[in-house]
Length: 236
View (cartoon, rainbow, N blue to C red):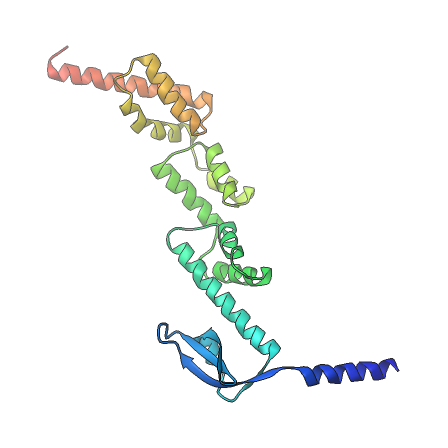
């Protein structure tokens, strides 16, 4: 009896399986790299030309095949969007995942896209962390503690962050961070100079034992430069 019921249910599923016939495949006018697929005389969906190349007019497609094609299209669209996102600057894997999660994509599709990007060399958290630290060191020096927090916010693993921060010298970074700012305060008295520049460096995450020696060094260098200028002008 059970075997008979299973046979009947199986036959019913086969009988109710929906199929559709491809009646036209047309390149899109605005985007010749995509093809419009028509099923049973009506537009059904678009596909990348590379995927559509496997189809032919007159071919029958079942529900699962249609869903598979649409899934491939969604993955390709997500991949292309991720590439555009990566075009402006390197990104972490977590940043790209957050972008893709805003779309109506399955977790499986997102991981497929992430894997493609990693295999192609477009997504590399180690390279991203090195880029982030190098960029900060060159243009906006910050303390390792601040850099660590920034990279954590980008979703980078602590082990990768540790490697990227190995070459950072807190004192050197603080000196470069304070140098340009110190010139703005060079006309202040020493007390005001220390308050202004010290606060500036502390807000960028540098610890007290690094900040105050650097502030003293920059004050001395500015005073020495001012004295040299006075000698050359004949005032001393």
